[in-house]
Image (cartoon, rainbow, N blue to C red):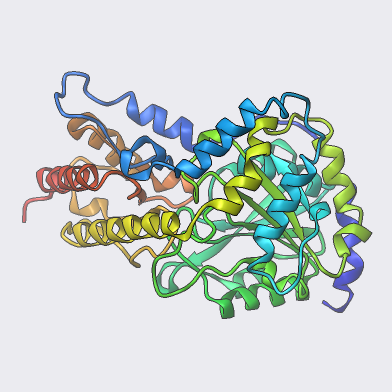
Length: 419
């Protein structure tokens, strides 16, 4: 679309229209957990959540802990934070992210948020122009659908292709987009798929978005958590091809999701987002909300500067080994297939074949009965837009992972149809 550049002005006049939310991962898992038999002497195995910090092997670095203590004891961070965040913190994040980019980010490109969830919320509020639609991947982290729905932003889903490492169906994206499409969302490394996209594939996505005259919203909350053949490449590398809004946080790489420190970054060396007033709208939305705690912001520069590669390497080794265990054990279960060994994030998507099981209707029924009979919590794919799939997290203690997968195998054997 040759006139795509003219359409950036269409994006800047978002109108907030609140409606009821939709399904959340937390809500689905809470419902499944209620099915656990309280008389089961075995501990419940949580393979449906995304919080590794519950397990000793995934404790954050003492560098981060000391930075928080220093910030609190300094008494320098007890005041209200400015809405975009503290300048030294935004500068530190800009420098940190610029290490992987062919250009240098400015602190003015960085907006601090209460975790990545608020970054998602603000982004979709800004993009919710009257009549607009946004393209989301299927499967997708459901917060995108929930916040789009609450802002009357139409959602259109493009498929991720399991047989191709969950790559984006580029032709499907082009078929879905029209003159009212404002953006497409790319989650890399992938939640829920455990995928890590190549440089070539990401460039093709950027070129497609440019052709369609739309933004790319890059969810990189699992940035650098890659342990397969493909290294992590930030979408912002292609910011000169298409404007990119990058969403991230310290939650996953530093194993501190409860600290709720995230960011929204405009990766846009050509200044298109500034000209189209997107940046102004982002600032306007943040003015309506509270930001992350000031003392955590104050700790971030020290966390980013002083955390050594040895900490990150240790986490990667644990995740890689856990992904191998998960993949190998799943391969032993006839009614569950895994199209790809996970290469990033903390999850794997596997396909369930209910026709091989007695008294199991679908993925939700599987998860409810698995919780009741074996005290194992797994997320049904229907919560992510993929019926008869399951999302399993492997970011748990290795012994706990082995125990949970053994119980899943035993459950499937008990319910297997007799030949």
